[in-house]
Structures are given as C-alpha cells and as structure tokens.
Length: 68
Image: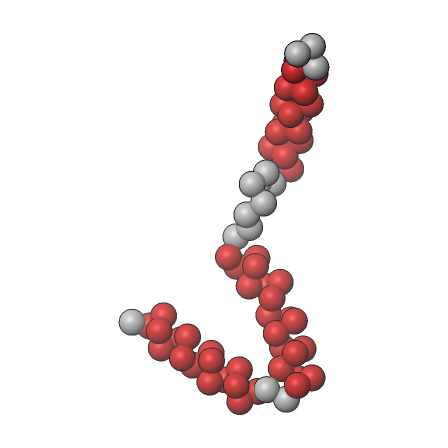
C-alpha cells in the first residue's frame, strides 16, 4: 500500500500534461478530424481498385439519409 501515493502522483501529473496540450485523455477525437484522416485513404483505395462508381453510389445514399 505504500506505492499508492506514488501512483496517484503519477496519474495526476499525467492529467496535467493532457490539460496543458488540450488533448483528451479518453482517446476520442472530433468527427471532422476522423473524417479528414479517413478521406485520403478512401480516395487512394478507390483509385487503386477502380471503385469510383461504388464510392459515388455510397456517398449519394449517405447524403440522402443525412438529408432526411
């Protein structure tokens, strides 16, 4: 039980480090950031595998679903 205080101090310092940089310790990120990370890979895969028609079809169906 003597290590409890030391572990608590380390955890508290870690939280302060996250707070200083504005990062979220839970590991979640904003949906726009996630989208910006995924779109280049999706475009590359569409070009490599020739799936532009499938991409357009899926994008239009998602757009219709979001428009409702």
